[in-house]
Length: 243
Ligand code: NDP
Image (cartoon, rainbow, N blue to C red; front, side, top):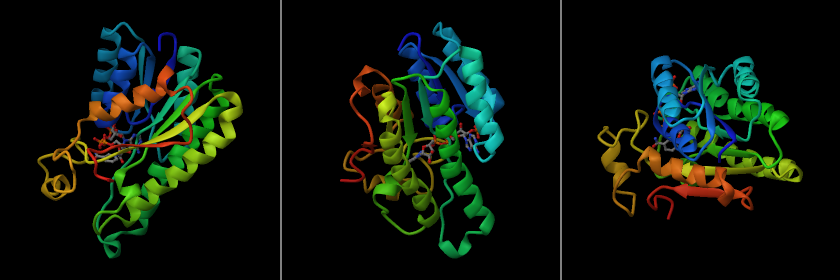
């Protein structure tokens, strides 16, 4: 991926940080956004630069339409092009429907859905021919294994439709759009030693949580030459959770 430029939303921690580092290892210069974790984002940039690549940390709340578009614009201004967008930033608000407020609904849809649409729209307008849009969905969009997932599953399911529509709309510019559905992955959002871990592990044929790097590996494959003829597709990285 030498000479290419990627933007990873929510790249300060978890799956996004692992993806930013993996894309840099593959040769890309990488910009990443964060909402609050400035220090963590700058640490990821330091590690990208240690690999001999350029890195850029941008504060951009995915719920803010202006900041989201600006993050794309600043990436292009700084690095001169954009080849890969990874829509990773997301929040998990789970729990019984009667406990969810209107603010919860608006916030989850703003970050997990509207932010992804707006970042994809801004990126597609500036992306080089042959670019890639890779969105992080969820195993809870493919199957809903228990109660408490209404809002989160609704938000992540919307990304499947968006991905397929992007594939249709951008194919004539050889821009691909794909979605990766992680299963339970050990991050701050869903720690492998957290209170809900045991129940999740019981549903996974491979019997363990995944690592952020294991999701990043599939994203990197789609972002690189291996993804040339892959678009409109869904990929599970879930230890068999959806089997
Ligand atoms: P983490 O909570 O560990 O990290 C989330 C990242 O997204 C952080 O970098 C965070 O930035 C950023 N972020 C959160 N909200 C915003 C926002 N409003 N604007 C910009 N950036 C934001 O999550 P994971 O790494 O676990 O999850 C990454 C993606 O994978 C999400 O879309 C999630 O839904 C999905 N996923 C995760 C699974 C899991 O089991 N972990 C399973 C299935 C899907 P900051 O540090 O500044 O807060």
